[in-house]
Image (cartoon, rainbow, N blue to C red; front, side, top):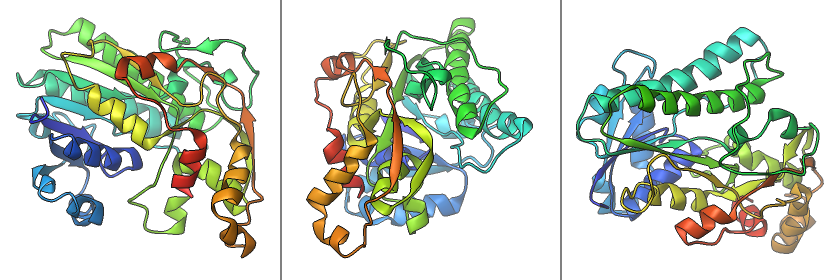
Length: 338
C-alpha cells in the first residue's frame, strides 16, 4: 500500500535521491538511512524536497554510520513494511590495489546487503526488499567494457560465473560486487526463515539530472559523465556499453516493484532503454547541437568529446510489458542531463 513506510538506503546518491522523490510522490512514507547527520541535512534542506510539502513531512531519517557493524540496520528497519536497498560504494577510479578492491568495494557491497537482510529478518514488519543491482551483473565482464562483442541478447535469467578476480580496475570490481551481492541475497533467503521476499532491479547506465550535485565536478561523475564527456570535450580512454536508462524510468520500476500483490517475489528485472541494440554514445553530439545551439556556438559546450561504444544487446521488452510503461529514449536522456 502507498501509505506504507519504506526504508531507503543510499538516499544521498544520485539514484537514491531520485527514489526519495518518487516514493514521496507515490504516497509512501520514507525513512532514509544515511551515514551522517550532514547528509540528512542536505536532503532535508534541498529545494526539490521542500517543494513536495506537505509530502516532505513523510520523510524521516536514520543515521547508520557503519553498514558493516553488527545490527547495523536494526533500528533503521524497525516498523518498515518495505525496503529499498541501494547503498553501495561507487567506483571513483582512485583504487589500484586488489586488496582495496576487495575491502572497499566488494566487501561493503556484499556484507552490507547481508546486513540489511539480517536486520529485516529480525523484525516481523518487512514484507519485501527491493535490491538495486546492475545489468552488468548479468553479462560477462569481457563483453562489457572493451571486450569482445557478443551477438547474444542478455536477459535477467543470465547469470555469468562468479568473478573472483584479479580485477583490472574499480569498475571491474564494482560489477563483480553487484553479482556477488545478488547471489548472497538469494542464498540468504534460501537458508533462513524470513517473512519477506526479494525483488532485484538491474539497471543499465542511469542518466538523469543529479539534483544533489553542487559543483561542476560532482555533476560530471557517475553515468552522466558519459554523454557529458561528449558535450564538454572529454575523451574517454575506456569503451562503454551503449546501454542507458533514464533515472525517471528506473525509479518508476523500483517504486512499482514494491507492490507485493502485482510483482512476484524472487523476480529480477533488467531496466535499459533503446533495446535490444542499445545506443551509440556519440549520438549525444547531435542532440547537444540540436537543443543547445547557443551553448555550442559560444563554446560553453565544446561538444567535441569522444566515447567509444561497446555493443551490448539487452532484452528490455519484458520489463516494459510487466510494468506497463515506455522507456524515455536516449535523446531525452541527453537533454535532461545536459
